[in-house]
Image (cartoon, rainbow, N blue to C red; front, side, top):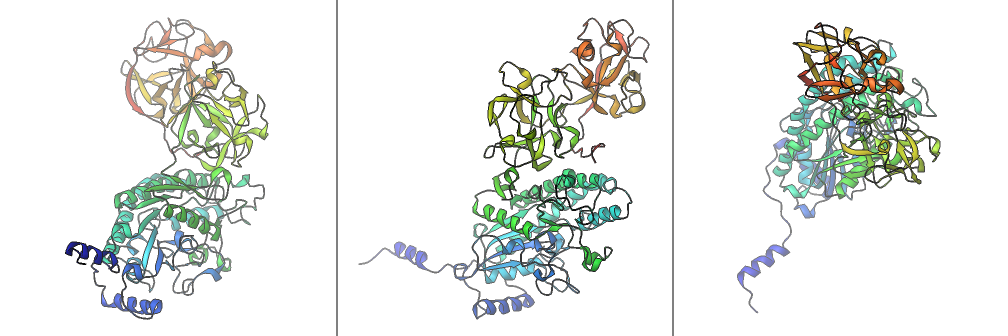
Amino acid sequence: MHLPMALLTALTVLTAPAQTSTLTPLPPNLEAIRKAEAIELYGDDAIRPLDQRKTSLTSLGDSEISGEGAFDRSLYEPGTDGPDNWCHRSTKAAVHVTQIPADVTYNLACSGAQTNDITIGGTHQYAELNQGDNLAIKARNTRIKMIVVVAGANDDGGPEFGPTMTDCVKRRVLFQGNCWPSQDPTWAQRVDFIVSRVAKALTDVKQIMADAGYAPGDYQLVSMSYPSPASPDVEDNPNFPGWYNGGCLGYLSDLAFARNKAVPIFETGIRRAAAQAGARYLDASRLFHGTEVCQDTAWVTGLHAVNGDLFDSNATRQSFHPNPRGHAAFGACLTQFFNANLQQGTCMNPAGSLSPKLYPGLPEFKQLRHAATGNCLDVDGNSSRNGRKLVSWPCEGTRNEAFWYDPATQAIHSMLSQDRCADINGGKLVAGTAVQVWDCNASAAQRWTYDGARLHAAGAPALCATLAGTARALADGLVLATCDGSDKRQAFTWEPRKAFTYTQLKLNGKCLDVPGNKPSSGANLLLYACDGNADQFWSYNPVSGQLHNLADPGMCADVEGGTTAQGTPVQVASCSSAIGQYSDSMRWNLSGGTYGSRKDPSWVIGSADGTNVTLQRSGAWAGGDSRTPDPWKFLTADVY
């Protein structure tokens, strides 16, 4: 039997052992190391075809993935716990504890590493190889299935997590005051600085693998973000060990800055770098919410000093890093991500569980806009402490006005913390019960359904979340009430986050101004030279008719004493005071730049003398510059 030559050739290709692509030779010093490692793996120094090699997993980067924070020093690989090498590679590090089948796992990460310690021709730490060079060796001796990279925290000019955390803790220990004021102004720029550097490290990893004969589909390159290690909600832990005993020293406002602003901004930077390099991206920034240092189950090692020396950087370097439980969580996330056909994924704990779950893409946190008031549902005080009320507030696009609904658990999570959910106080499924935020716990008190307009308590579908009050448009608390399809106070729209726009209001070349730059209830409004300060910016809510001030959105333009008459001063007052006989004195109709009182539309906001703002028969305002509130607001004076 004679087969056609083309068919014979095809059969030969199909049955022949897989061959590696063209390899770029290693420099002699690296080739010598490769041969020695190959002999240890196989008994000889040959480079085998991919399908004949042992499989492996590899991690690159810094202390977050190396295993720093093991606390038990016996867990560190020999030679990485000082005195000449402080890489602190743990035998319980994430790469070693995944459920991804592999013959060998390589932890090449090192505490303190910078992106240049990964890049081709870059630097190295201690007497170690550059991590990229080390990867090149492993890639020729084994068939690498996954490379996970966690890097960017240590580059000079970048976030510099180590010195930043050290400064914050030192200030707390020595009672020197908050660290966030010195960190906040430059944080975003420092994150921007490392984006291209992380992207280069990832791109170089791809080149290293190509030089080792790998095609892009032969392995997975995963860039993972950093989780938040600490929380301003630690005192909610019923077994709170104390600031010193628990090693969670830090001012609450500094912890709020870290969780609510610093880590989320850093996450966006790592995500941008992954996109630039074409790497897969795993967002772990919310993974430790509820398990931070000093929580009842902690996945992070708190402030810990070997030999008790708090001022020795090598003695305290383990502090505020994932402990073995944290790395087990990383391992669970990486396993799920490896098995998923996703370019982007997010790993979080559903409904307060301690079982990390991978969610496709990035969770879309949305605002809940209230039909009766036009405002947004807001976690009162920008705080996620247990028991904080859910209230009506002007839409600001901030994290305390953003929520994510998990259809699997029916939980509504606050963007402030994955461990805080919309909760029916005390689990009392009866009308009048307040709705608050509380530790997520998967109970009936935290299960909700949405019918396109109303949020129903899943365990009592006849009850709906309601901003009842008096429809005063601000600060009403969310409660349960009997569902009524005609009641707009129960109607909410899930929509993308969007803040109210605040605009300067100009009349005769001057701006509507609150005296003193800080709204004080009862202060009469003036016309003043436009100076760009926040107190000269106003936002009109067409649903409620209220005119909010940017310097304090809880303050609104109001007719003094509620008297509609020529020359009555227009003042600022608490927007929540729009009740009873004074309700309409704080509400306006806007038409062609004229703000007419809803109490008597013939009277409008104007000025007779070019200085004092009063009720007049005419007054058309022109818009000036516009701005929106700071979306990264993270402090609340009465809590933090």
